[in-house]
Amino acid sequence: MKLNRRNLNIALASATLSSMLPGLVLAQDKKAPVLGFAQVGAESEWRTANTESIKSAAKASGVDLKFSDAQQKQENQIKAIRSYIAQKVDVIGFSPVVETGWDTVLMEAKAAGIPVVLTDRSVSVKDDSLYVTFMGSDFVEEGRKAGRWLVEKEKDNKGPVNIVELQGTVGSAPAIDRKKGFEEIIKSDPKFKIIRSQTGDFTRAKGKEVMEAFLKAEGKNINVLYAHNDDMAIGAIQAIEEAGMKPAQDIIIISVDGVKGAFEAMMAGKLNVTVECSPLLGPQLMSAVADIKAGKPLPKRILTKEGIFPMEVAKAEFPNRKY
Ligand code: GZL
Image 1: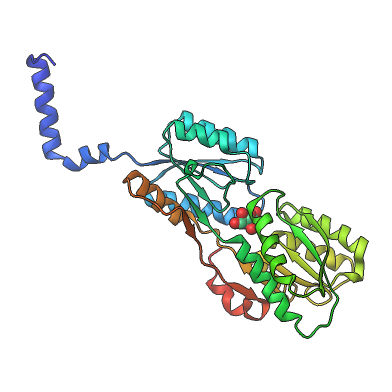
Image 2 (image 1 turned 180 degrees about the vertical axis):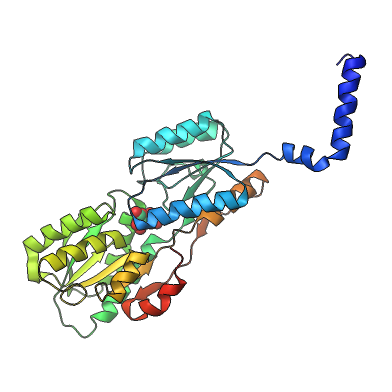
């Protein structure tokens, strides 16, 4: 730069400013990390709590959050990821609505040099370098916990124990894995039989609708309902009551998530047990963003620890619940 009186004055002024206010200059250099997050939708109490956790953690940690809701449609999530690539965000985060169909858009993110963090659900891709880390629950273990609870509950029952199953969103990691884990445990005894299994897409409305169809087809032949999430179980409870049967008595009900609605149903004696699946991933996600910005390596898998809550402990546990 040619030094003349004007340039010299500008150089001197900025030197003075930076010597007087180093913090300000540093702050300007330390731009808030920008996270583009493509959420599945707003299909359940769990998802609402998950969104709240992400938004409040971003605010608390000074992360500049761009957020989108895909209404449970993969094409909308892909569109949102592409818009984050175009905006050159620092990190992309998302909870993949289904396991497959992500290779192309994740290769685009990699080509743009934007790291991707998976939260809640994972993807099935040929090259796992397409994402930095996957943080979330072990859904197979959640299914096993549900199965083990039922085996213990029915240990003195010679059978048959006829089970109807409300599956989560077709093709989603939680639906595939919760089914897998549950079946792994109940196959130990032939008295357990899954007589009907259909998706309720993780929503109350669909859970009720499908349970009505199960009741019409099988009626009193149903001994157990295994629902892949509490929202579908709560919808099914309405259907069971409308059919003149007693939920959690005439039909044992097992579900997953551990949301407030499940605790309220257990305290009302209408749900037997819920397997915890924590949606509170916001703080972990923001610390991953900070680590990525700082160039720190992350483990490929960050596992959330979870419990199981039968109705007998619901009242005592309820005040401790955070979602
Ligand atoms: C599980 C999450 C599932 C919840 C449902 O981590 O992906 O999606 O179990 C939610 O309630 O809709």
